[in-house]
Length: 369
Ligand SMILES: [Zn+2]
Image (cartoon, rainbow, N blue to C red):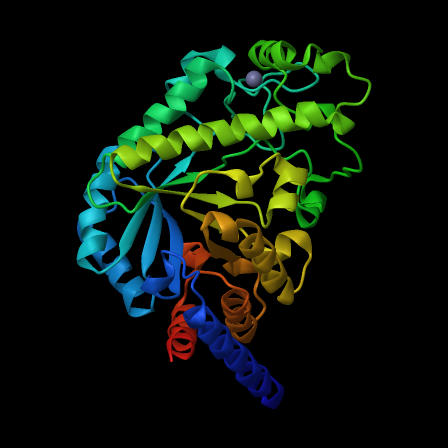
């Protein structure tokens, strides 16, 4: 206990110092003025009443939560129902969308050619990598990308939402997080063809037009930088177009991303430090990578440094089920704060027990002191 107190005192001291440096700096980011914010991701449930949501939102607000990111399965009506309820309880709302991975998308399912194709020629339409809900759409094909951007636009139109929040804005995992491999009984020492996407004819055609070569004829695609970069750019292009769309409605663009840019690039072909975006929510889930609590600070700092020049705010994503104690949880929040995060966001709402909400409130009071 004593050790923990000392640690907390040290952390608070560092946090205060950091704040003073920030205040004295001329580079105060746009969201910093709002203070360090706390959020949580939630998924809406059909049939859950307004009153039930009011109670849930009230509970979050009382525990120190400032914003919620709601996955309504891309249903604008459901989002329009929940947003005023949340707003009344003092919570900001973000419209969370599963972007490239669109499980059960009724429109997309009518177009089998829209789906990503693996290096071994199988389409996500009927051959799903890892799990049944991995149903990824091609970011290059005009029709599939327009479908996605259309969904983004429908959400952006909803009054009072703060942002459209892109999730699964990447390729399927070419490497799974190391902590998850045993669950799938997998060893991934190299890039495996069945998890390597997208080799659909549109992607091959677009790549050949620029580079005059076919990746399917490459001796080793894992060291073909043009092919890697082509895919990074394909995702970046969807993000940048989504950004233009949401700005028409005076909304922000945000995204849930992998822990820090180099890691995201390596694991899922996602290079978020290059995007036109307002804020990112890196999922710094220590348990997925068999890491310790201080790694949350390390990964936060990596991202903060990389996007500083672009004035993109970082909200550290924290995965509740992986904590062994409330003390660890409090330390994680402080590690994010002292390493320059704009806030922390928890996955997910239903896992925030009374104990966690109390801990959030206590930590918030320390940070805001
Ligand atoms: Zn493709």
